[in-house]
Amino acid sequence: MRLSTHTDYALRVLVYLASTGVPTTTVASVAEAYAISRNHLVKVVHRLGTLGFVRTARGRGGGFGLARRPEAITVGEVVRGFEDHRSLVECLAEPGGRRCRIAPACGLAGAVVDATNAFLAVLDGYTLADITERRSALVALLDVGSGHAP
Image 1: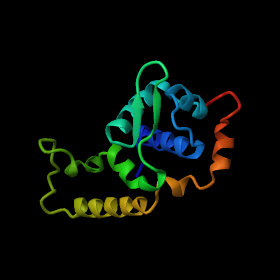
Image 2: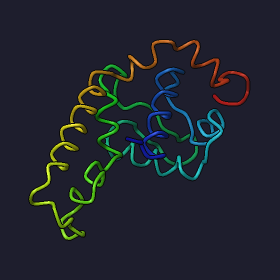
Image 3: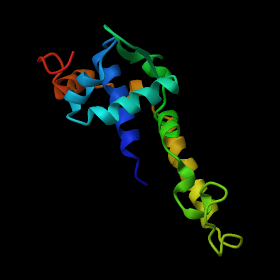
């Protein structure tokens, strides 16, 4: 299984916020810290806000920050918010899509659903706090404080 770029970026944004401890930051700061696309991050941060993971403020002095404590955000819920696991195989795709000829007799869909549920259950066992325990190492790697990020 491979997570989408948007899911990857969402997790990176949350790791940045939790590890640096900054109350508010900007898309430009996060994009520079990770050397990733600012345009993609704008969409990711908007979705993180819609899902309630970050709070956003527009305009001069605006930015975004964590809306909940890192201990209250699981990796699994972030992945669920960004991934469409129904499209892993064609027979799980949205209704109205192409159906596989053998779907009525095939057990693949059930196996994929079970595997996806197990994958997400493992990710539910990890919080943002868990994956940012090594804060000082993360901050050093993000080059925060050297003028590259807030």
